Image (cartoon, rainbow, N blue to C red; front, side):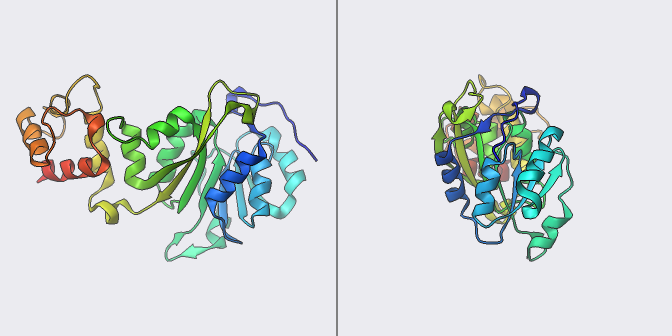
Length: 270
């Protein structure tokens, strides 16, 4: 049965129809047979079908109530289907029953996500437990470029994502791979999540708070953005810290790597 419901702008829906793109997502996911996979926004079920065929135990969350019955008809009990908001739903109990790894769930998040919730969705699944071990997500190409950016093109989004995960662009996806055709190109991004406390030796949220100050005004240098802020440091102290780390004291936020943001946070908190 082929599903062809009308896509709704209110749900940020654009149906992925290119099977070549679906294969790239599945390859990046590296699914093991029986592995739990959370899919957000299954839509017409094209990616869902590929996940099932790959042997995943699929938990699919769909916000659009009009898609629930068609998805039930297509997949029956081969997936666990939830109608709800991916940003607020409690992690479903079936996920906890599928596989345990120590004291936390082991699962992957694989999805062609609604682009209007990208930032909020990334924030939730990167920072809130239980976190997936890997995410393979379709996002706008512009957003993918920001997520995977290197100096001097860093942004607050780059810092947040790269603090919590190793991020890599898998493939650019032309707008013609969707129906209806969107106004932008897209990209598949792979996130391999790590424990930031173990990786960096610091609370990642303290680094993010510092980065928020650093990026608060693109036109200003770091010492100007941070001076007199909530961290209670002076312009001279920031300049000294940057010099100590081998950086130009006139540096702007976009030129620092994530490692340098971590070092700067350590230095200013000493």
